[in-house]
Amino acid sequence: MSAAGAVFGDLRPDFPLLAASPKLVYLDSAATSQKPRVVLDAIREFYETANANPHRGAYKLSGAATDAYHGARATIAKFLGASDTDTLIFTRGTTESLNLLASAWGHSHVHRGDRIVVTRLEHHANFVPWQQLARAVGAEFRICELNEVGQVDLGQLRALVTANTKVVAFGHVSNALGTVNDVREIVKIAHAVGAVAFCDGAQGAPHLRVGFDALGVDAYAFSGHKMLGPMGIGGVIVRRKLLDAMPPYQFGGDMIEFVFDGDTTWNTLPYKFEAGTPNVEGAVGLAAAVRYLDGLGMDAVRAHEVELSRYALARLGEIDGIVVHGPVTAEERSGVVSFSLGDIHPHDLSTMLDVDGVCVRAGHHCAQPLMRALKVTATVRASFYVYNTTADIDALAASLRKAKERFGAHVG
Amino acid sequence: MPTSADGGAGLAALYQERILDHYRRPRHKGALERATGVHSVKNPLCGDDVTVAVLERDGVVVDARFTGTGCSIMQAAASMLMELVRGRTRSEIDALSQRFDEMLAGGEPDDSLGEMSALAGVAAFPARHKCARLPWRALAETVDGRR
Image 1 (spheres, one colour):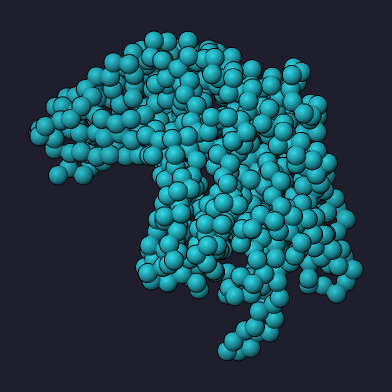
Image 2: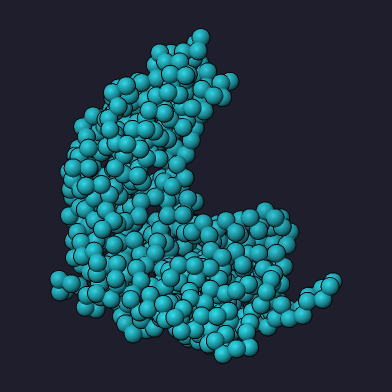
């Protein structure tokens, strides 16, 4: 392996924040990614050349804004492998997407005595909405446990997904451990009993080729800001027949067809689920981001991350006292390595790494039910993306060794 | 360039030996029989928690102990705080709490805080202020919410 590492050359010059801080070691892309210049340029260009409220005015400029918004939807849908463009609903991000599903689909399709199944890996955003739906309607809420390396126990899942199960909600990739789930198998288990399979793709879409049409899931939620796009934009792709059978999620402008004094009819897809003035700059920025990713190629992105993960597992493995949580091999995980170092508290570690310019996440990773199962209160998580190199991992390892020395005897 | 504090010097101040000593050998850690007030608080950011129990007699804290899990800063702060509050009245504790907050805001060690003045180095790490304040928050509730 070359010093820069892996599949691409050094992409840092494409990312203004990283280019301006050559010593910064950014290893928290699972929280949010850095943004390439092309994304920032696209947002600026929209405001400088096409800004107006889409779908509103009969004037040309509004038409330009409408075109920009729709063009972005088409670009992103294609990138995610969805042929039915208008089934991609823009939201603020994965959290809103999952709330949309739990609220609009859930309240109209899940009833007393039904069952909802999630997994122990879920981020709170794919856990709490379903837990609260179950409480509200009197449904059962069941959690599928993991095997000893942090993968969904498919045998247990088969047993849990009974005939009264209406939905299986699961992540494509775990944000806390990096586990890549066997989506097709989980879908098969859900569909065998007529349940829908909803996938939280917040950590999947940035790192893996999604291929929505072939994946088999009934809905796939994602966030733009984790895949080089801006914050505040994301979406959910949902099978058309489910969207048609769901009531709107929010009411307001754009989502209506006719408003009478006593009742209202709904607009067609995707507008039925997009109330109010949309986040056009976000959509345009995200479209630029997926074009950038397309330029790299998602297979190459995946290969790059597997290589970085493999390198990280090897380097961290050389440090006495490091315990890595989650799957054993780089191939079984996304670019996430979650670990503990002796009895050093993750916040102490994170502070010490920060002083060396190494940004990692310390905490429960919005997955408290998972942390309880791992019997830790928190872990340190390093996560990689296209702009990271083996040099970043070397810096992480060096900083960890220093931290260990400072805390001395209590490690190991 | 967004890094905390001033590199190694800040870190040395944050993790000075006095703090690490309290972390490794916490004082007054454990349950307190016949406590007159007990309160637990959690730091939702990291899941850390601390429980403070006090025994007050005639308006004076005569004993104080803590239990809980957390980072070195939280543990050291709790250990030092238990020492600091023995023999103090509630209004004295309130005044000390105020001085502690001022120390975190300003970064200058405050001798009236005893060993806790060693935590002045936390000032340079805003992300860690919560850790140092956590035991104070628990303590305030035990005093206010006397059973």
